[in-house]
Length: 232
Image (cartoon, rainbow, N blue to C red; front, side, top):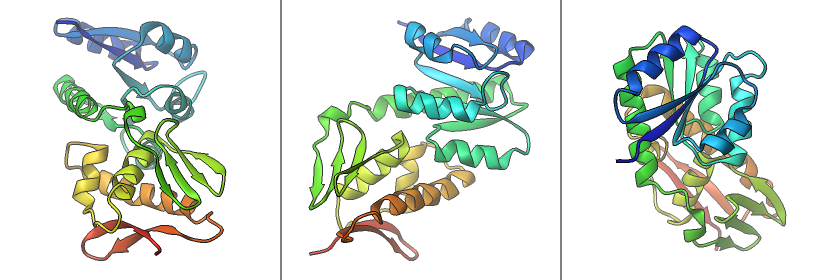
């Protein structure tokens, strides 16, 4: 069996050593970076299957690295946050992180999170070229580029924004519950993710509102969830 590769970006060398010693006993190979430098280069060279990314890093902030990586690769990313950094967790989810775990954490919990994210990643292939382009008048959802085009203005979407919008727009007038949309973000029930769904919907709405003539919108169905509506 080919081992999955984990890239850990964290300046806590004691922590990364412990994690590395644990995972190399099992089905994972581990690559470690102890600062925010050269992450892009290492990702290109090592081609990890999943990235563990600390928010507080010397050299470059983890959230900035997350934004850069989201534009470049479709690799699942778990954010490592210090206890009490709620705002950083939410921002990380907004930017498209697949999960987060709060320090201090147990190795077993980290292992469970990694396996969960890898399972979801495997069940939700990110080969967007296999998805058809969706066109609603002057609004286009380009699956190949993972892009929303409104009145010829191109807007990049995060991985999570794209998946939510594509699911809704592929099923106009169908209401999806928050629980169903949560499955796009995580296969776990987690309270903070509920807020994250609302934030992703808010971001998508702001982009859709840039239509000169509002042809499409995401409507809140109170007590039920959200649906994509197209004016007829």
